[in-house]
Length: 177
Image 1 (spheres, rainbow, N blue to C red):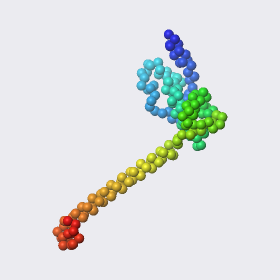
Image 2: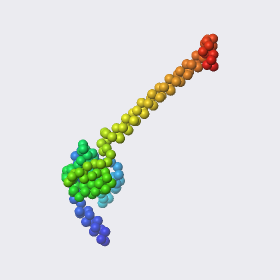
Image 3: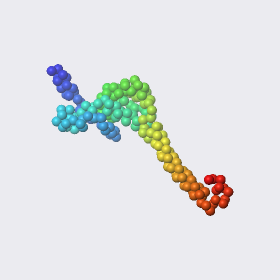
Image 4: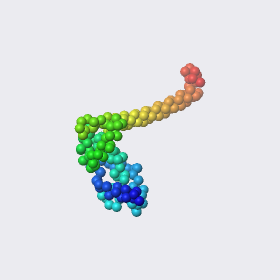
């Protein structure tokens, strides 16, 4: 039927672009390609063929954000992004239109966008603050444990001191019982 022809046209329309850029990691996880049986028609037959996940806008967006996070001032040239990610510029526009719509980026100048959201770098911002607080909590927990042990030790020493019959003749021990 017509559905088969449309599907066939889509398969023929794949450009075969390689989307992995140098220094960018492909996220592990949600791709369904790994769970398919080897004889499935959706499984790529050669390294140049791509699964739907490999060419997905979601995966491309993650790579776009990684590229943006490498920019020290949060500004990215869209021509460079299309080049590095090896995709057509319209695919970059698909991403930027959504990110601009939810106010995570803004147009800086022609072909340049700027990140407006929270810190993208994992070594700065909230991540570092959280790690610092986690370390502080660990140190305080250890300190509290030492103090609890010291209190227990002092309580025991005091108990032994006051219960010792040799010490009963001292007025300060009589008042503690």
